[in-house]
Amino acid sequence: MIGDLAHICNRGVEKRKIFLSEDDYLRFVTNLLFQNNKSGKIRVRKKDPLQDVQEILSRRTKLVEILKWTLLPNHYHLLLYEVSEGGILEFTKRLGNAYTKYFNTKNKGRSGYLFQNSAKIIPISKNSQFLYIPIYIDLNPVDLISPNWKNRKNNNPKKILNFLKSYRWSSLRDYFQGSEFGSAINKKLFYELFDTNLKEYEKDLEGFIRDPIKKLLLADLAG
Image (cartoon, rainbow, N blue to C red; front, side):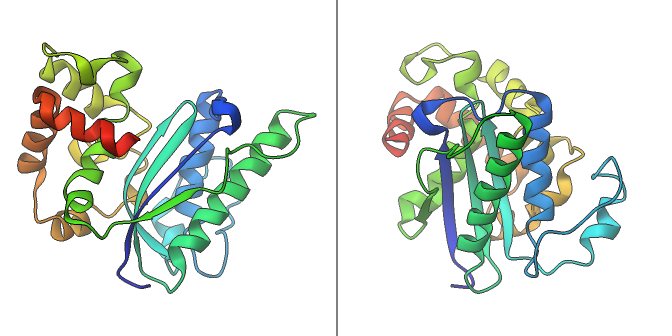
């Protein structure tokens, strides 16, 4: 339904890596841009699909507004806001199908499923989900540099935040310093829906990194 919010996630079959190279990550992110069009994927002829992206995307009618995205070696997370009826489901299907086709073609001889199951589409209806899901999505990459950080009392919040702000395969970098993928997300809508701003949200992120009780909440969301 238009106006719905949902957390989308999926992982590789048998927990296998779904991103094997920088090109793989890049393909998925460009799909976030070019698959988000009601009448179908936006076709580009240029070798660099991100060149003149604003002009290309001005022609589209969005299925969803993307508020957050994070890619990890064997899974991904999205936070979506529906703007066309049925848009969340349609966009999620397109992403999975398009990336699987790309991956199997690139890795010659491979066929069949890439993802574990159909992507999880988790409606955000409870207050706890609304408050914490964006932070959960943004903190996911911390596992890459500190796998047991949720169980540690003496994490270095500044170091972790600096890592997150510079991690290329997450929309959080766009919120803090911008990137070539900025057209994929709607920062203004995120701030409006979650009644926050960059400074307040950074404090919230740091609070979850420091506070053991809040870390337990993140662990529950992961489960």
